[in-house]
Length: 418
Image 1 (cartoon, rainbow, N blue to C red):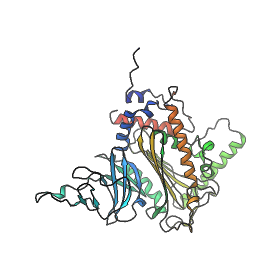
Image 2: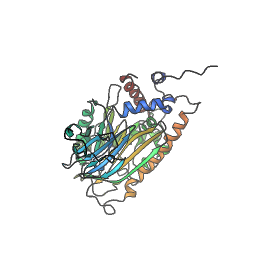
Image 3: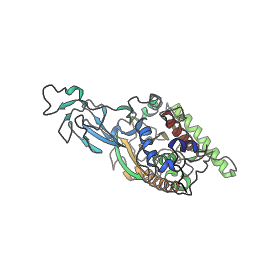
Image 4: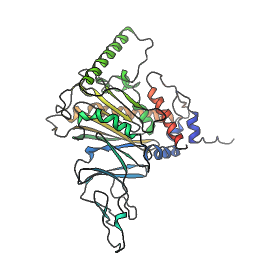
């Protein structure tokens, strides 16, 4: 008996029934993973860090993305620059992944030396006819959006990053997130496919049962609810939520904060994002267990604490900005079944640990939530690789953004001829 023919990537995409999950092969196969990295992490805009990663001239942050690697540098003029992490001599890596501080970028192989603006300063034994001016480091397309460092490795990056920038600039401006520091950062590896990490982030169907710390401040109704067969108590809770949400939105708008939801998620979008200003439960101040601010020195020149959560997601990141701090997370795929999740907690640059904030209070919600999500992604990945797995149906009320992501994923691959 002959073995069944292995379906192509395109055939797997076409086999997905609308409103249902993806076939398991799209999460587990190496060839699919390699294509995903090439298309979604080398040809699209991705988040690779925050400006506070390189706070001073000479600070460097090196990020590996599949076979590619980039060096993020703050130069002597305080400008953030990004380069391919490849020496222009024989290709050696200039820096290992991680952070460091340098005067110049020196190749560890033959000591070719580059200024922070990327120009080749020194190359020994190359002769009088050697032209150093055409051996500068290769720049990477970069867009700074608030504190976010977005890059695109493609020769011609998608132009609709401008919409994200224009949308977020007035929303983030009051928080002055360029004037922040990293109070804490974490790095975890989830044993699951990157698409499952994003799918998990796109719905809160699971929140009430699995995220007790997050739901102390987070209202899952913001991401959908089933209106059918609601009890009288549930109806009253829903009405209370809707009234509070409307009042908060109106109050924020009166004070000059831009809070309306903006989505660029459909199949014709290249740079996918969504943003809104979410109501926080309880005291309404911050994503903490008390729902009050964790840092008493507010961001920027803010005086008002109850600004909710300015939320942003892209296809490899999610951001939460409150009056007192921001939490910014992004992912890098490592293997079909491994995804790196980096999270950074930002506070005002002048905030003092132990005086203005305690790290434990600042981080406890999202440290717990990230650990819980890691487990959920891992058990889902394992299940999708089981021979018994058949894609199930999405909730039309609480998993609409998962369905939207699935459609966008297929559309982007189709646009690249897959």
